[in-house]
Amino acid sequence: MRAIARMVSLVARWLLRREWMKLRAELTRVYRSHVNAAGCHPTALAQQLLISGEDHRFFRHGGIDPIAICRATWRGIVLGRPEGASTIEMQLVRVVSGRFERSLRRKLREMALATLVTRAIPKEALPAVYLRIGYFGWRMNGFENACRRLELSLVGLTPAQTARLVARLKYPQPHATGSERWNQINTRAQHLLRLHSLHKCSRAYAGLAIQEKYETV
Image (cartoon, rainbow, N blue to C red):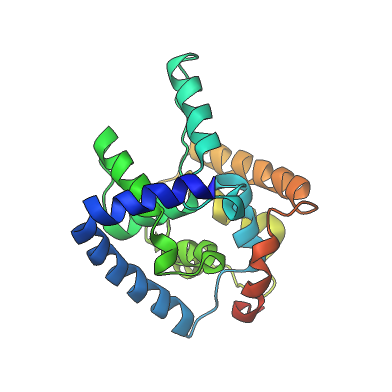
């Protein structure tokens, strides 16, 4: 999988040179802000749940996941069931660049740039960086703001509370939250915890060991 990403990255550096230079500068700024932040950093469990729910082959690919792309293509075309194949790198590119339009061109561009992300941010730091700037809902831009908005303290944050926070990345909480959205958040949180129990004995989180230096709880 990494060999494919390397080939794509070579093409991306040539075809998307100007876009990459702009994105790299912004990624570098975001990473420095994350490292130097005075507040608490996203917890290790939150990073693990993110990997389980969004990108469980995170440490095995180089920004794009060919397996997920093939599966999503098959289910979308043959079964008629659209499915995402975004990696954490791709989601980070989307948030930092502010490009959310639904088009094949945007998706291909996002995939290409995702293979270059680790040139600006270390792979092991990407889950924490994404959590720090991700959108969790109304007035909840970033993990720390979400905790503040929901009146949660990172010290003593329970697994269930953490899972519900991470679930909001898939189902952002609107200003007026109805029962359907609450059910989506709670169901997603339970699913994340089940995935975590399956992945914690594998090597899905192996690369996060270095993240201990960021942990503050």
